Image: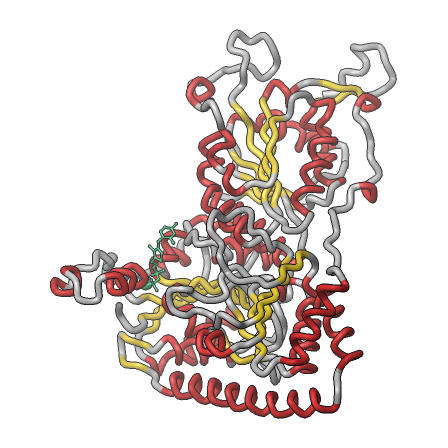
Length: 581
Ligand SMILES: Cc1ncc(C[n+]2csc(CCOP(=O)(O)OP(=O)(O)O)c2C)c(N)n1
Ligand SMILES: [Mg+2]
């Protein structure tokens, strides 16, 4: 409501929530993924107000579950690099985003999480005072503690007069590398406060750039170039450099110039899998032999319980996040650590190397590239052999299933690989040419792939976005909420459920710790879930296309039908009965 008349001034006067919506749009929040409650009454009223006045505000995407909202923001940020808004209900809605905040934080993806707080007035002193039961029970002492381990910044808006300042601060922090979630809480009485438009400070958008990451100290660069010149077995392991196109190009360029074998560790694909230097997803054997190693934007390059690098090896750690301040324990080697933009740093290294390269170095590199090619050929042959076994009826081989899906995908299509124990088959059988098109979560909170595929689809409508999950992951993802959003907002995604009848990862973990234990003797791994379920019905309930496949012979046609449905605009789910746990 415009109360300027009542206050005898020509300057219009609006509620804080009005400026909040305006400010969000100004900082580049085009979408608000929302799950509403009583705390949002002022915001919902101002949405209608701004709409009536024809004024810009973020597009609202209503998500039946917060898990979908949080992960849609993840998918959108993965594609665009831009954090969006997630608006949830006080402490309870925040709690429901905790799994998502964990995943976004560990994936270094930006998001502005916002929640109301229970009103603080109880006697109707102010507009927005407590007026219902839940307002008396939804006020914990420390609401932010529900997600604090996964935040870069948090604040409770103290007054509407600083709402735009608060948003500027939030966006500067979430967009600065390493990116991640920020959290703003707002009480109803603050959101209903009125302020004259000239009391709200305006900002030029361009004055709030994120902090940009730079290159490295030239002396360290020179030392690393020397090491690479002398190396016999240099390797490079990367996890998330491929989120930036220039880093992907820099890795491939350096690797090809210096004959460096490139391995990928979680979370995305970083260089073209057609690159002559790309050799796979497990560096274990190479780590044992490497004399020079580059860890580039990576969280877990190998498992130290499986493999230890040589004592005399030289490791350069080049990362946007060398310190890993979010991890109490991080012990991977670094004879030098260079924090910054990996693409810029690797370009510096390549330049230094080119200046120093001798004819002898070029000969060594040529020989090394031959060895790398042999390792590549061996890996590709192994993958083909694994895919050739189609499995049996009721036990489709995941390698074959994934290889058949690969035939239907374009280079720009995106895979969200939550295959858990079948994730390696997906990686191996679906080689990607474009960086950042096959993604796993940086975190470990299951239930992310559906929402993330939806958010990516919203950001890239021309791409096919594919959710691949296990039967366990399917449940965690609140699939009814995912398919409801797919239907309501016309975001067709492809869901492939690899159903092995339960939690194979749980069974395998017991076997790793107790290879000959009680659980094994009794064949009691507490891992089986309900048998003979029909996940297609969940999709069908929301107008999506669903198919079940259990005979390997039917896989190619079933996949083709599902992909066609999605490309034609309707979400589809293929429930595949794969090798049982
Ligand atoms: C939110 C959450 N709860 C529990 C786990 C522990 N967990 C890790 S893998 C896994 C089993 C997943 O089952 P499924 O998706 O079917 O994959 P499978 O292990 O069968 O390959 C579980 C329960 C987790 N990672 N995240
Ligand atoms: Mg399973």
